[in-house]
Image (spheres, one colour):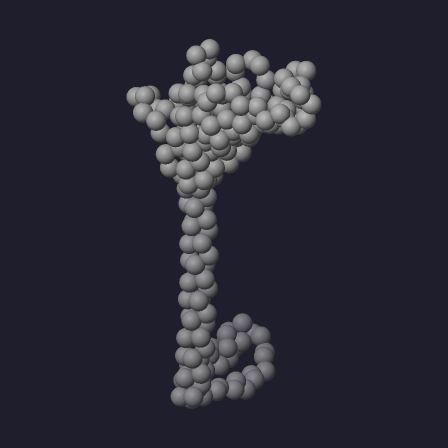
Length: 204
């Protein structure tokens, strides 16, 4: 019916305007139930694709947000670790012991061995150390030393050059237990009465 009205409108317009046109046959197609079903299936398929794209976009966005939040948390943890901590102790040094391996007297390659006691601020013994030094320069009385400190919660290992000045600066090379991830430095100060102070500046 709509197709017939369209043809009639064209004819009336041509008569009124004086334009002579040749009517042409309009082929009307009949839409069957199968075509309707096909069209509906196409629309559902397109809608499903759109939903899948939306879900995929949401999933990617969630991953991106998780990475950002995780990175912030990791950065916060790193900042807290980098803040560091300081440990202070008192030391009771053991009597001097020299293992004379070469020429008589102090010579290159001789060993200095120590076992010192570690106390907290209340005077309670909380640990000890094991120190081994190899003399590298007899004239300067200098020795290469490694020391392991056994403390509450684990051990801390250090390395330093030992020389006559009473203040020794050492590097923290590692640890175990609660100190397994530490790094840093420290100072060992010797007093004339065979006592001293030990300070660790730890990171990690």
